[in-house]
Length: 206
Length: 206
Image (cartoon, each protein chain N blue to C red):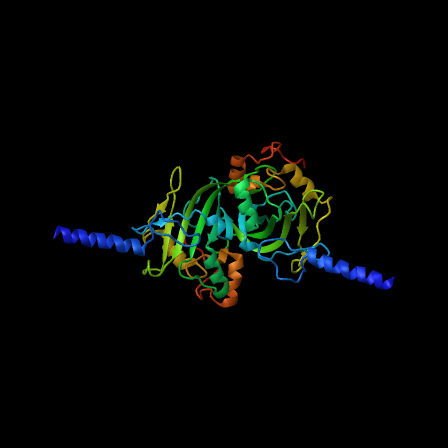
């Protein structure tokens, strides 16, 4: 019996290794890589993906300052294949991965007078579309916050995390804030993929 | 004599076509393309290059608002080959092309409360490193501003344009404001390519 169980365990391990690429394997440049226990590997090359937009001091989402504290920049990047898919269809293909990078802002840095420029990174948060892996909503959110370095892997945030409801209820296209990505919003409007329920004047109740 | 001149003109045209790719030729994805008369073609795919940084309301450079007017976002992109070269050496390879994209900012758009987000594009300005084409300074600046659409080609700005002196005197690495590109400044500091004359506290006299 012990031997049988051991054999079953070995088989499971082998299957897990087949289904989920190993965490220490060479990470592909442009897709989500999960560990055997379902954690997302930190995508370190996201600065080489496609840039979508930046905001300063936006008040939705995590890591926002309270009144009187410094304001953060947020930069959004998406995998190149996902970008190409969206530009053609106005929808996100399976495997789409978006990174929200939070950075400190600097005031009057170098020769700038009165503006804000980008400084040290605070954290990254990641959103992955994978209907097979996340059959409940089709999307997973991951927070790589850590001190002093970011975490190397992150478990999917539970469905009770605020990002799920906020993205579901307030995004212009699928589960993403395309209303803040000017070049993509044009595509979605042309291709008719903006949600019929999207209301640009809608605010989240405080 | 007329015939000789005509022949010479034809020969010149043929040589020009050889040296300078035709304006209407298929534009390579990742390098500067010049017309036969030396104008730069507008690089329409720059949003697929590498993103370097954003600022909001910065007061150096053109298309800045005066007091009380809306503040603009500026986004900087660089060609992928140039980025790879910089990450390896801390210097810009020949052919490097950077785009400064100016966008309007929106306040309280969609669910955002109190922050600024990116809106319609205002213009793009381009900087190209080409020591053979620009033997005077090694760099050329190009402004594609136009109404209602951006210009499709732009002549090199004359050396009297303010960008030449400002970039020469105030940039951290070569002719570029790497002090505003956090991920690149780290590389330049590590590889020792920050100009010895660069002073982060230096301001341009008003």
